Image 1 (tube, rainbow, N blue to C red):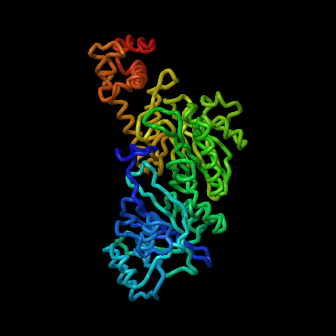
Image 2 (spheres, rainbow, N blue to C red; image 1 turned 90 degrees about the vertical axis):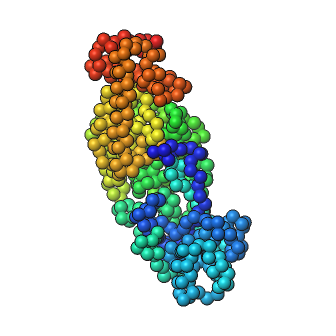
Image 3 (cartoon, rainbow, N blue to C red; image 1 turned 135 degrees about the vertical axis):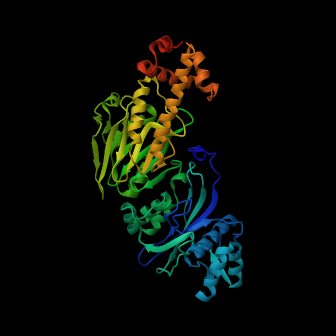
Length: 508
């Protein structure tokens, strides 16, 4: 998982420049989509707007009326990618014909450096005024492949004839759909879209074109809102928010679920500026889906997961839900127990099942949304990182491992940890199992060290955490105490644990 270690970090993979075109048909409001080959490593099988990387050959010399050279390069890439992927040539000049453009398209597919010479030879040019800026998106920092993408909207009077690249090529299908049709297909699971196209379609479906364009220019990453926001499935919004949490994490994943009615899970925001930014983004999500918040759900009561719950509850006049042991600081909170369901109104059913998973916190809950099979697992795992089980904060290693075993039997389509990158399909249960195995290996090191006669925490730490920097020993000691408590329950002879377990309680 090394490529995921830069989640919520400015030091992720360097984004490559890319351009995307929203080709908008004015008479009926349809938009052109391409479908990426299932075999592709990046977004395989996804529907998208045509576009791709800016090549070093995209000099911009055939672009008229561009504001600067960089924009001219992006526009050249945009026109070239649309031509390659769909056969549509977004250029002005001499009359175009299939006899000219057909052979040129397949030549340029093999040799993109021939695009600008082709335009020059046929007296074609790209007019920047045909391309309205429609936002900028940077792939989240947790992705191993990242793009800094400029979006442009180009209008056409009618649906143009289009053709895919071929069944074995990058683009296997092309189609025209209205934004509403595409969103409905996505909701039914018939169409997979990444966050930027979904964001675009929601605005195009909701507002007149001029107003939608204005809103598209203010994307989440460039409007002083939040970094790394993604909507991996219709109605599942993951908003990493800055939180006072343990390293390597710097953010908590606040998850918003639903359509007409929205549930906000784990708003652990303590900073006032971050709260304002989150509130703006939440309003933007509500506007995009035409919904409103109706509930706040807490996986547990640690501040990095619940700090803004009371504020949001008061602002929207909505209840806070959680396990009874997580609601002591929230008078009027509504208790949820294992097996309970919370239902949200929407076009399709939204049913969130509660799973009691104590260990990190006695009132820890996980939430499983049935329709999308999304598991929000709070502080059961981090990706990357480890979860602190602290005896002094009512942690219990034995219960924690049992809870992980329970979660590993689920089959989620998406697992969202409290901190770090989301996990697709089997990767979630695999991380639960790997975490159990890691903790048991660590515990075995504790047991073997105790059998040698070690009797102090100071002696145990370098033996058990020999792979951990000394600077992290204060945190490691808390984990060590949790393992000692578990061993003291009967998994190790009493005479090997009693003295050290007692000394660990005294902090010696």
